[in-house]
Image (tube, rainbow, N blue to C red; front, side):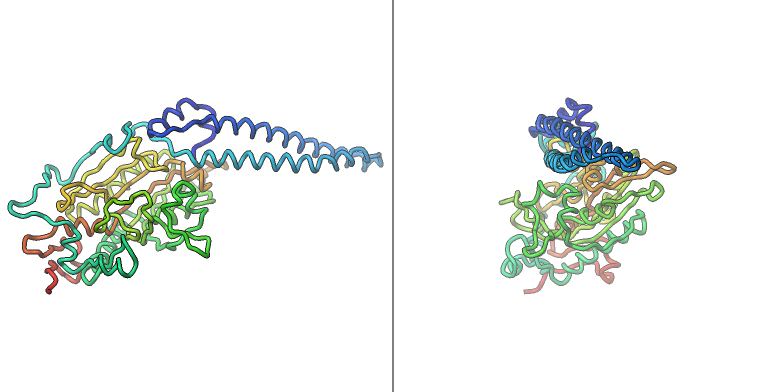
Length: 431
């Protein structure tokens, strides 16, 4: 949520930053509601002041055995008026909050300006000089063909059992998912300094509001029928909400958490996209990274977090590139985002495998997550960051497409072999 003070003091600048996202964001409603709120607040405070004044005067008169009947009569009339004024003020505050919750975060000053993904900027690629050209005489297959040939993916059975956009991982496929997850968590906890968390896979409305999924993206969430819970779309939700409503002492920061969870998304806005394979599923596994930092350290933290996600891909020997998202391609809560895109030879293109974002104080304001500086009583919002470290299913996609062999087998990257009992190669399923 944006800082109302910033909107009041720099309205034109805020409108310009919002406009750079490509949408239409008129702040007239905000300013009109602000005026109504100030009026309601002034009326409420005046009535409260008069009530307090009467109470003091009544006390003085009673102490001196004076006649307080007139003041008590005024107090009786004042009560309903004050109650009505306080109710009007609450309505104005709720209306103003509703407007604020519809506004996205402001892009950071160094974010490339552009209308959509066509204006995103490639920062670097790994390995240097990578061409993406397959070996001569070998045409790489899509991951769904490789997975079915190896007998590790079963899309048909999942469609019959559940429906579209679900998958059964079978045999070595299930082991590969487990190996990838364990490798990522081990790397982040032992070398990158994260605390591992295993959170619930359900979240309430308050938590989803705090990280910005509600109310804007409700159609993309799976909601339980009989209970007030949602299946989490990402571990960002429970991890970031660990500081909701808290005052964090400066000495505690930064907080760094990682978690593996299943993630659940309706993909309501992706009808007809990636209907085959693992790229866009209703349920998928992801290892998430979350930082809670001091405001002055969050941009440096974004660089560190992104490097941690990159290290996963390097050790898996997967070619990738880092892309800085432009203003028109930023997520709702993000002020700055780097996407890591992995090369998929079967599709002949790069696809996102990690998105690393700094939300500044946007989520913290929604969550009322605050920092108290050492030696002071004043509090201010923390900064929150999140990123995939990385999407497990998409990592499997990249392995299937990049490590497939002309004879139909699949080479296992060295870093995963200890998690698979030394297995170095998968052979095509017989029959």
